Length: 614
Image (cartoon, rainbow, N blue to C red):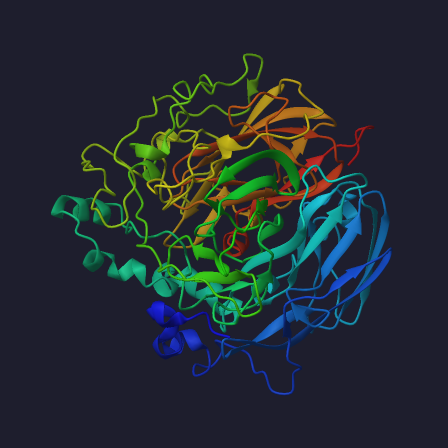
C-alpha cells in the first residue's frame, strides 16, 4: 500500500523522471538480460542451527517496477537472517551457482582469518559450482551482517543480516526485535558504474551540475570553488535517481512496516548494507536510544537522529506512543532520496512522510582549512586536548596534523551561501604536497591535500551540524562494559587517506592496493598501537578493519572508549583509534564505499602469531 506519496513529489514522479541512462533498459551493456531467470524475493527468511546451507544465485530483481539482475543468497535480497548464539559452533556450506567466483565475509565477526572470506587475502574464493565450508566458534554477541567480497556483488544484492544472541541476559530489555537493513539499488551493471566513475565522477550526481543555480553564492565564492575544481555539492558519488534507496530490500513506496502496541519497547537493529551510501536516520516525533554500535554495547544515549556510514550498525530502542504510525526515514546524505519504513499500530497504518531537506554543502572545514562548526573544541567540552601519549613513538612525521586550534565558525548551511565561510583562496594551495610526510607517494593519485586536518569525532556528519534536534556524534559513545586492554599504545601509526577525485583513484598514503597488495601493514603479536587516519580527500570515508575491534579515541577514558570496526573519517579531518593486535593472520583494511575500495583504497594488515608466524 503506498505511503500517501502525494506529499512527496520526488517519489510520485520518480518513474517518469528517471532518464534513459539511469533506467538501464535502452543502452547496450549498461544492464544485463533478465529473461528466463527466477524472480528474487524482497525481504528475508530466518535460518539458524549448527549447520546452515547457503546458495548464491543470479535472479531477476524488481524494485518499484524497475528490473535488474541480482545476486541473491537463498533466493532473497537481503539474504536470510542468520541467527546464532554466543558460544555455539557453526558450519556454513556456501554453494556458488553463479558464473563467476563468489565469497561471503562475516562482517564484524571474530573468526580465524582463513574463515574471513576475502579472496586473495584469507582464502582463494568460491569457484562456480563449488561449495566452501566456513567452520568456526561463535565468540561474541550482537548485530552484524554478511556480504560478498568478490567483484562488485554487494551492489547487486549479495548481503544479509546476522544476529548473535548473548549466552547470558541482554543488558537492555525490549518487547519486540526488528531489523532495518538499508541499502541501495540500481538497474545498472556495477562494472558500468565503475567505468563511468573513472571517466567522469559527476555522471551519477545531478547536483554537481545544478548547484550554481540552486544556491545564492557570491561571485567570490563561486570563483573559489572553481579554483578548487570541485563543487560544494560533491557529497556522494551516486544518488537518486540512479539509486533507489531500500529498507529490507523494499523501495520507499513498497510498504515495509513493523507492528507495535503503544508503550512497547522496540529494538531496531539498523544496518547500513549499502554499496556506496550514507544515511541520516530519524523517526519524526519519536526519540531513539542508542544501545549498541557495530554490535558492541554502549551506554544508552538518547538522540533524535544519527548518521550511519556504509557498513556501520546501530541498535536503538524506541517506545512508540498512541499515534497510529511513525515514519522511519533513512534519508541519503546528499538528500536526493530516502529509504522508508513504518512503525504501525495496525496493518496499513501510515504516518506523514517528511519532505526531503535541502542538500548540504561542503564547508571550508571540509577542505581541511577553516573548521567551522565541524571542528570541536575538546578542552571546552571538558575532555582536555587530544594529544598523543608521551611514550608513543610516531611511525611517520607529518606537517599535516592537529597543530591548530579548532574554532566554531559559521555552521554548515544547505542554501545559505555560507559554505565557503566567506574565505578567500589567496595564499591557500589545496595541492601543496609538501604538507604530506615523506613516505606518502606523491603522484597522479593525489589531487588534494588537507591543509590543517583536525579530529572531528564530535562532528555529527555532513548536513547535520545545524539541525535543531539532538544528533549523535562519536564523542557521545562510551563502552558499556570496560575494555579489557587499557594499556597505553607503544607507537603511533599514521595513515593518510588519499585520492584523485577526477580520475577516481583512491588509496592509503598515495598507494593503491594493486601496488601494495604484497606489502602489508605489520603488527606484532598483542601489540598495542594507536592508528591515526588523516583524510586528505573531500569525501567522508567509512574505514573498516577486518578480524578485530578497535577502541575509538573520542575523549572517553581508555576503559570506556567505544569498540567499533568501522569509523567514518570526515572530509579534510582526522580520526584515531587504539588497537590490540591479538588476532593472528592476514586481514583486509579498507574503505567500505565499494567503488572506493575497488578504486584502490584497501590494504592488508598482518598480525604475527604468538610464536612470530602469521
